[in-house]
Image 1: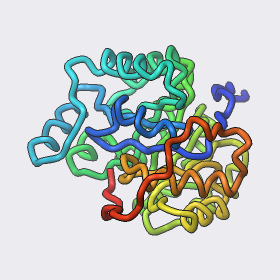
Image 2: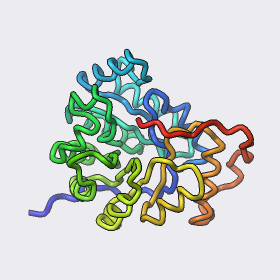
Image 3: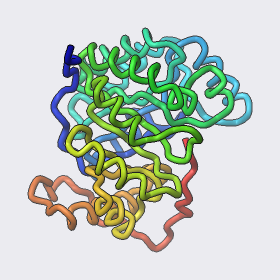
Image 4: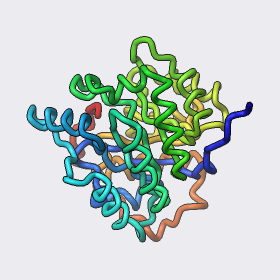
Length: 280
């Protein structure tokens, strides 16, 4: 029997702002909106186990979103972006599938992307089955994707390279079959993996490349490997970096679809801060 096609139409995106734990909220997305096509809020822990892991991270100095009601928080944050010219997404963590389905329903109501976090590498999150632990359990990951897709959301899966025992090409093919529309790859120091995934999935997934996206050279490298979209991580709150990357993307594809009148003036790059990537 042929599996049902749960995927929605691929969004048209070239540049995204990637989620930063405890920082990427609606206010952050509004600030990035003049430069990017999509902004991923979060990550947001949804269930008891993932929220307890997030509390442990806060106890050792990490910033995390820990609202009393995660679903109400998602709904409120997305609601404030209704009239903002950016496609919103929410990066979520959960040790169980039901909260992912519920979050996907909220995202579908706002035409937002539900991004399953199979990416975080902190011990506390991996211990409860989130992040890299979910990435290593492809069957469970596919159940999350299918649940979110069945709820009507556009589904992205955020992953990272260099996880022992994980074949990202196989993972990409499996989650596409489960209903994912996007595959968001933190390339670490293995940029070539983006090319391997692109060659394997073709048009089945919108392939988003992340890590070290700062300038024309990094943008060109990822698009040459076959990425459809690039995302800016740690410096997504720096308009100088975002402008530089936006210009590089527009140079690559042309800017016929962009409205220059809505863009801020070119920022001053004379005192640009350190841009080193900090993994989420």
